[in-house]
Image (cartoon, rainbow, N blue to C red; front, side):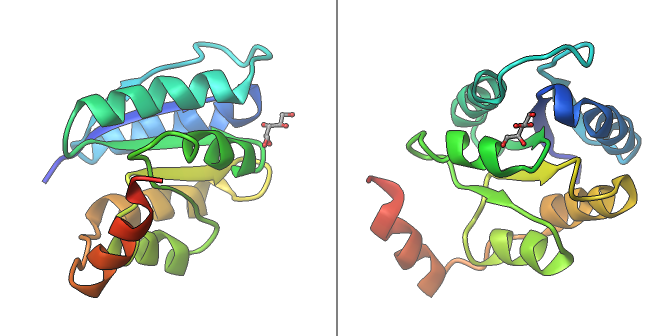
Length: 145
Ligand code: RB5
């Protein structure tokens, strides 16, 4: 089933954002591109908070954030209560962050992860369900911190 996906990058993640927007639209997801519109220098926390606001406002939606490494985006996004942002570089990360951590934002690094791998990681992230059970209890231990 198609998901609602809010996506944003900084200048260092712009090219990968363009690839992902096209791919996810073709897969039938409803993709909202929150910018930037060009690869102009910008600050990744600003992009991160555009996506965190939208994800929190729309239940069941997901976010994708891309910077050079994915690290800055994940640090910024995880400052926001209710956001569980996961930096993924491999299939195991992309699957486990959904199954175990109920991640609602996927972070990627364009300078780390090639476009072909990144597209696959986004697909896995959006297709994998949270397993709940004992994992829910663990998430609840930090959700309100
Ligand atoms: C930008 O040069 C770079 O610092 C940024 O995209 C990101 O990698 C930060 O974590």
